[in-house]
Length: 337
Image (cartoon, rainbow, N blue to C red; front, side, top):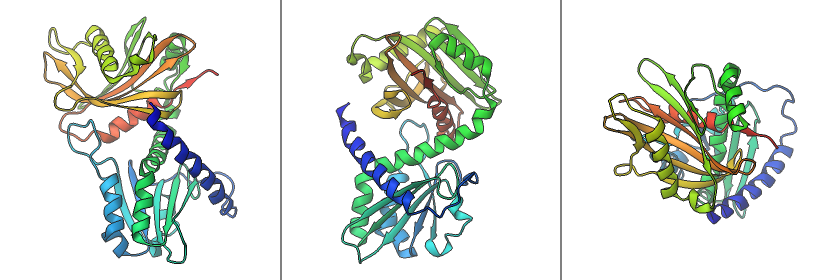
């Protein structure tokens, strides 16, 4: 859990830069911004010339953002990349929700990172890295690339929720509030499939695919419960008890052999600290499977560990963006102060 400390330091530095960057943009129009553009999980890369995109800088960007996202049955990159040179960076392209700007300036002594929010549209994140040469540019990018991804991820979630929030199912959210003590946005199309004292199962069933959200609680005793093996063990017990499969005797569990679950500890979840698990679910006694993402955090008011999970079933199709939509819903949680 201590490994998050470097990220916190970087975020502080970037927050200071954000203030400076915002100060340099006082001429921007005050008021309602246009809705940002760009595909889901897409980043616009703006370079000074094609050589930057086709050479070391472009290779460095692609190596990170086009790596496979963990926990998906078919290989899918964590992001999609669009590219243009700065000469073509017109007002139309400035509406992109996620923008990374490359600038090489031999006249500066050391790299500078500037980042701004909602500069030309909303929601939007613009990150500009200026360096004296391509080597230092790549080094600066690699040092903070996880933070950049976190910033772009937040924009993705914010934009998804601007679409989903107006269709919030108030009956379901009220039931969650009564039962669990916190608010969540649950868009229309979901229904409550199971409502037990310690477990809720929300489902959305379409013709070719389905989505699900689990909310469950267990008594919180110590931090050992937040270790991967303990989290997976509790998950398997809950799903065996409450989530049957279509075949007699079948039930959902965690895939542990081909795509073992992976845990990371984050401090950017709305409740504060949370354990994030990414992996695959499968059925015991049947052949269905798919990806899931979950967040587990201690609830000081109730003395419980709370887990929120989203899963996707969409055989033979890409699932990254569907899982991101569920992740955005899980991030919509609001607890009382």
